[in-house]
Length: 315
Image 1 (tube, rainbow, N blue to C red):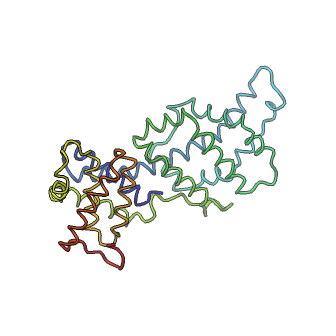
Image 2: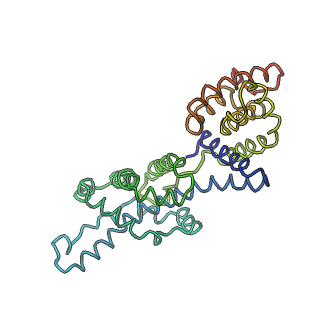
Image 3: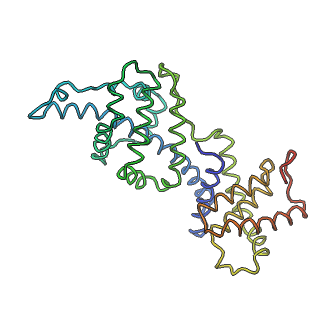
């Protein structure tokens, strides 16, 4: 699921888009931010659907084999055990999943070769043969083969990678979140009774997380000039054009949290943005941000502008 670091990255992306387009309507950009969160859930539903499509292609494959001119014994009597896989049958009855399929208009006819290609990889794997030969199946053994399809067939497929990258602009960033959501789904689907099995939630507490990202986004824009001045005073020895835009945005976001988010510890804020900078900015950004934020933090403390609620939240 999306943790606070992922949510900070979503705000960073929204702020980058806002400044790149020269500002514009804040509310429209805010709506785009919230939609970017929904896109993660949509991507999750598309992936669950693809897993289901790969499994159900066993039926199509069996039909094609029965129409062959020269048939083997396996062609005449294919093992279709996977069609009764508990994870897949439970997913097919899940009301939230079915509603999401309809909402996002999920269907794979635009990429007809993908499902077939993935199923052939599955069919030729020793793991699939072992699954078909297994007796005494349980919900756990059924989930094991689905995990294999997801991790070793779909995620290893260059074609599947390209399809998701084309469809979801932030696929390279959100891929790790997707894997966490699928892993949570495997954990949630622990019952033989379908009604007890629940989809993963995109965040731990959407009501709180929504407030967090909206506040972080809006306060960052509202105090943009003020925070830019703080940064400018501490970077006088640097030519402005040499400071990466991403570094500036990360520093403004950190300052926003220092001043406006009373329950977020200062150390957490600094560590989070230093980690984000490793992925989204330059190799030297980490030490640069650390040095500038330390100077700004000292000044903010002297001005008594940091008011954290709870012991140990400042140091």
